[in-house]
Image (cartoon, rainbow, N blue to C red; front, side):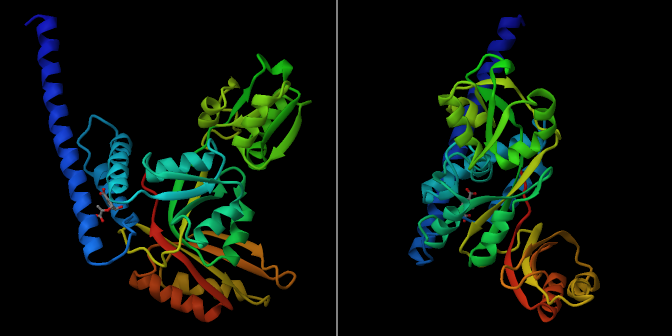
Length: 362
Ligand SMILES: C=C(O[C@@H]1C=C(C(=O)O)C=C[C@H]1O)C(=O)O
């Protein structure tokens, strides 16, 4: 067979596969519609999103991937198929720290897919309020960064909010220096979110030691300003770069190449059923007595439950008293986690399960 004939044959095969894919995806979408009809008929409300089921499907795709595509790549494609199917049932509206172009925006798309309805908010407080007021069923907020640590404002909002955690998103963060200027010599001011300035501190010290660093409410806001301002640059990501038509004077200026931010999905649902690979987040406080924290955490050790994170924040009620945020491995409904939590509850003055939710898959 000549090269032309070989190519024609393989392209015919690809066309036939595409037809099959189209038929199968449409059949899958009809099934999702039927799920919605069954739930509506049973009167079980308009809440069709099932995070634990989505996590299981994505995990299954990664675990049974036959190749040659990467498991992560195949899971991303399935993420979009599910997003489109869910939008057919009922479009999902998600509040996040806007404007469009923030890293939180990118986290929303990574977790929910492209078919989500975006509700950009001006502050983290507004994201919480929007979800509390049921204007949006879900919100996405940054919680910690691998270089800069915890986002204190988010933790403080959790202390006062009745909302629950129903998912987590991990996003590799690449920062670029974006500007209307043609070269670094023209940059006198750098706008960015405080976290981004901190994550690029060494690069800025070495390359723009004399430029003023101006913290703003978000990186997208910084990009917007840099687009209007001569002599200015912004630190922001890919989405902001294309959205605000800026040049990347330098890409990937983050001090740590594996710079990752973790986001939480917040909602009003009290608990998400176990997906098989889950985490539980808990808020506790204890009196300021010797050994109090040790006693508080003992039930975790006794039940063989591992804690992946502990953060403390001032309680804001009494000086030098703290609340602790714990992330533990497993779901609050797993027998040993349940037992550990019961012990913790007895030792703690304040005890609240913020949520049990699937560990990030993508
Ligand atoms: C189809 C369902 O609803 C939604 C859509 C899903 C999908 O497309 O696979 C999975 C979970 C839900 O978010 C369901 O409840 O199974």
